[in-house]
Length: 297
Image 1 (tube, rainbow, N blue to C red):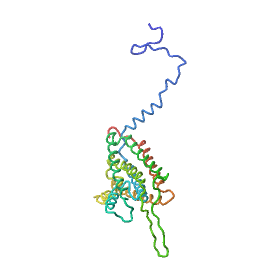
Image 2 (tube, one colour):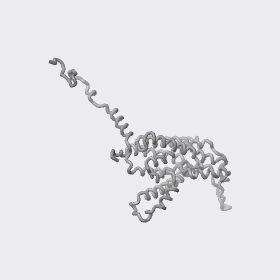
Image 3 (cartoon, one colour):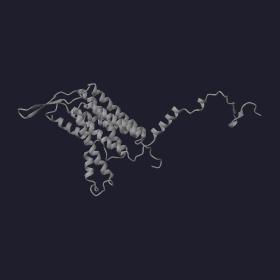
Image 4 (tube, one colour):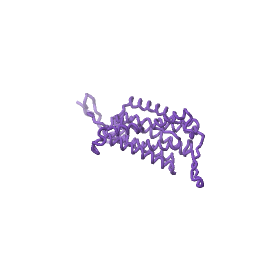
């Protein structure tokens, strides 16, 4: 016979509950619950359907940043085909209008892009190509690096304006373009950073298995579009791959055009980079909210 308390399960004694017990001990830890849910969500696989929207948007970012980078630094940070040509010309001391050793910018961009591709691909393989946490971390890193470069440009640590000037001669009816023959070697820092992070979006296209949307190459994409057997026979909405390629090419062109206009305006290179960083930060939020893949998918 139990005189104090009541017998609890598993042969233990349960003490009587005092009336002045704090009700806070009965409430679940909401902070711990949120952390657990967040960890589970970050470990989940994203739903593959519709992820091409991220890649199509990245074409605009590529055009935006590359046009501004070429306008200010005379090299690309994403499209390495053009940089390869620049390096080839630089070996022979051409073009004659470029400063000496200007090709080193393109060479550094190629090397950093390759290094970035290696690091990002290894990161995706180790943590899961389509895991939400992997994609969030990748795009968060890209946005942060772009933001750092934007700050460097804003604070005038690196070149922030076009290093050439145009002077009109109304009497002769011509205009004279004056270019600087010196290289600001500090510009190698933002070029290397932007090239490294740009590889992340190309690796993402492979991770999501959308090899037809490389986000930085338009030549092969145009070839695939024009060689499509259903280019003209398929309906407007029936050929999804064709439509994605066409829209991507248009967005890259629009991004380059916008980047060119912004570089010439008061927004400048810094504004272009802040816009690019913001777009990638928005993609981080989108990855967090993106539906997760079903178990049987």
